[in-house]
Amino acid sequence: MPHLPIYIFDLGGVLIRLDVGRCMRAFEALMGEENMRAVLGMDSNGEGIKAVSVASRQLMADFERGLISPDDFLSQVQAFCHPGTTRRQITDAWMAMLDDLPQERLEVVDRLRAAGHKVYLLSNGNDLHFDFINRTYGLERHFDRLFLSQKMHMAKPEPEIFRAVDEAVRQPDSRIIFIDDIAVNRLAAEQTVSWSTLSCIDEIPNL
Image (tube, rainbow, N blue to C red; front, side, top):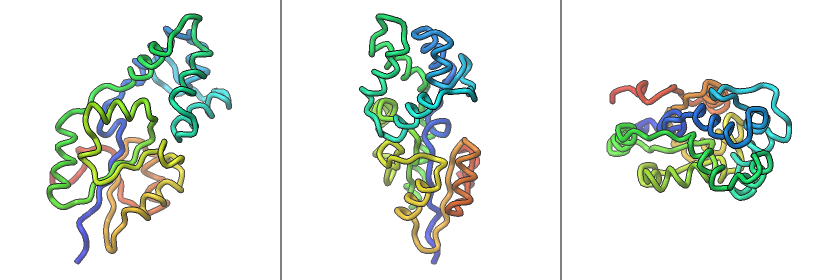
């Protein structure tokens, strides 16, 4: 008899609401528009900038993959800020990206687990954001296991992260359903490990 479908959720944009524009405007106040665009690769509306330095792209990628600590990240960003900018101010600006996590979204996760589904989290993140989210919402108790880019030292949409998660969770004859708001991540999951994909919680059938 086939197993029940396995559900794998993204965090930012699927469970927790993000306000990237608010975060970028906070950084603009700390470092000016030019540095904000160069270091963080976003404009004040949270839209991506194509022309970002290799060093800046590496900084963000290394932080997301857990290759540098939060202290290292804050120190490197601080070097681009106005004189006198504190690490507390930088942390507050970084945390401004997080909006809220509606309770009804966690209730969806809980209902799936109560119905017998295995439910996992697969997130590109960083320790500053995740530690706050986990303290605030107790994410660990809602999922069978968390797969975090900063702990795995790899990130979506790299094929390796999907293969690693698939190997860890797949059961014989199981269907894996991956919910992620970013199209390139969904495509990579489909092509790499043949997961079914959805773009938001509202697309989950039979809720």
